[in-house]
Image (cartoon, rainbow, N blue to C red; front, side):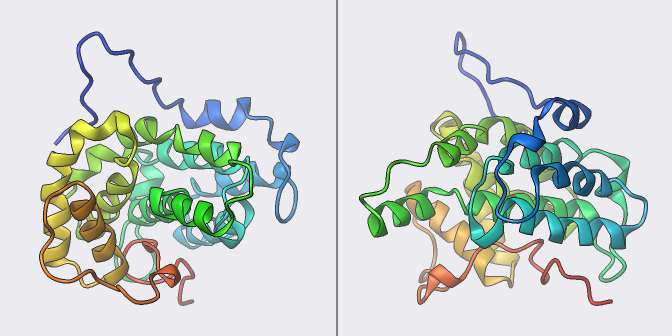
Length: 247
């Protein structure tokens, strides 16, 4: 269970930069933001490394509003996602949330999955259907091109022993694997998708797994989860509730 395989002679995708590089070399102030200023984003990102899990979870909630307001991909979304992916191995990601004994890493992966869903094939196709006269969104396209890089950061956690980390990693990986460069990983990921359908009780995550199997020709079992009003559903923070902490 490894990261994306590459064909012999194929150009290698660039590696994910260290989080310090993303933070320092991104011109945050140049971004147009839905709320606040792009200069607010680095402060929130650094709070994800605080030793207080309450601060970390609150920062993720604020980050969602800053770079994913109304489920939209903005210029700042891509570097923010790169930063979150780059800190998955940081010791701060091993902190436990003050409820549910769930690692912050599960919440980080869940944030990635939810953000990736906003630029998924399904959402892009739906937007093109509803607003056919709109020009293609270059910001969304650029974000979607990061999927192979982000996949390599997520893939190691497909082996994680913690149920919440594992499930969040699988959901993120399934959405990332929509990228053509990751087509060879789909058969491998199909096993994980079936495991989610067998073990998860969280219907939005089950739907992501079911849709991946169907799209990839793996004949998912049973009817599609959440087949009605699916536009109201998306993969959640970690399959166990909102990012908003109950304190």
